[in-house]
Every structure is written in structure tokens, then in C-alpha cells.
Amino acid sequence: MSAVGENETVKDEAELLARIRNGSPDDFGEIVRQHQGLVFSILYRYERDAHLIEDLAQDTFLKAWKALEQFDGRAPFSHWLSRIAVHVALDHLRKKQRIKKEIGFDELGEDALDWLQGEEQRDELEPGRAREILELAMRELTAEERLVLTLQEIEGKSVKEICELTDWSSAATRVRAFRARAKLKKILLKMETEKK
Figure 1 (cartoon, rainbow, N blue to C red):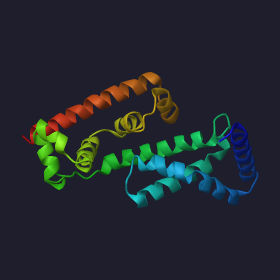
Figure 2 (spheres, one colour; figure 1 turned 60 degrees about the vertical axis):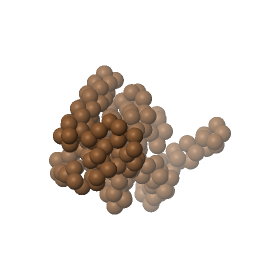
Figure 3 (tube, rainbow, N blue to C red; figure 1 turned 180 degrees about the vertical axis):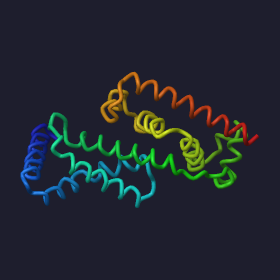
Figure 4 (tube, rainbow, N blue to C red; figure 1 turned 135 degrees about the vertical axis):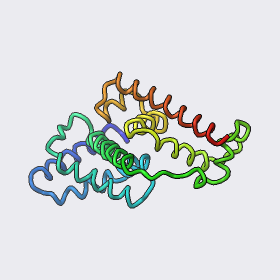
């Protein structure tokens, strides 16, 4: 998009937000239409159930609606909304952590169990099975540990970007990422040892 196009989009968005703040709540539906793809893509990184993603997206937009007066326009609206979506995802992960169900190794399937038993078989593991093993291991992490690993390792976010999304300091982000990686490695090694 050209600089002129970007300026027009920002101007249009600012006008739309001004109308909403001045008593035209029906215009918020346009905000939802413009940004639902972004919100859904963020939430999909933390949850795979389509119905839950819809609920989380609705929660994200509701929180944005309620906090709209706090948006000061210094950063693009999409960044502000992304932060809200990340916080909704983090709250969801925390809740899930409290009520998580344990999945037994037998529910992973034979290929995944074989993979845990030996180095030579790891190369042969299907990507889907590897993802199942990783998801099982990730369930052992806290919500914050899962969040920092997802943002840094899966989404490729920089420490600065993670700080902006989470309100964590740079040092806290680096420490959380280091500890989360170490804990995940320990969990995976334990899984492998238990299956031998």
C-alpha cells in the first residue's frame, strides 16, 4: 500500500473511531469487519477450537469496545487491538491451565510413542505427531511460558515486540523465554525417559 493509501486508511479509521465515540455505536461493526482477520489469526495461535476462537474474538472486541476511550491514537489501532487479543489469549491459557485435562500417552498414537523411545525414529515422525507431542509438553508450561514461547519461537516476535504486546520489561521477557525453553526441554526429556 502506498504512503498516501496508508494515510487515507488511518484518517478513515480515525474518523470512524471519532463517530463511535460521539455516539454512533453501530459503526463499531465496521471496526470488527476490518480487524476480525487479524484478531482471529492471533487467537488461532493459542487455541484450535473454532468455537472457542469465536468466543475469544467476541471477548476481544467487547474489551476493545469498553476500553475505546483509552485508545490514544499514538500507535495504529491494529496494534492496540492486537495487545487486547494477546491478553485475552493469555487469560484463556491461564484458565485452561487451571482446568486442563490430562491426556495419556496412549491417546497420542503409536507413532508419537515410538518417537519418544529413540533418537533414530525422530526423523521419521510425521509433522502432525510431532505437533501433538509438542502440544502435550506445552500443556505442562504456565500460561506465561506458553505465551512467550509462542510469540518468540512460533510467531518470530522480537523481545521488543513481546514487551509491547505483554507489558513485560525486556529483562522479564528474556528471563521468561530462557526459563520456558529450559523447562520445555526438561519436559520433553522426561517424556522420552518415561517411555523407555
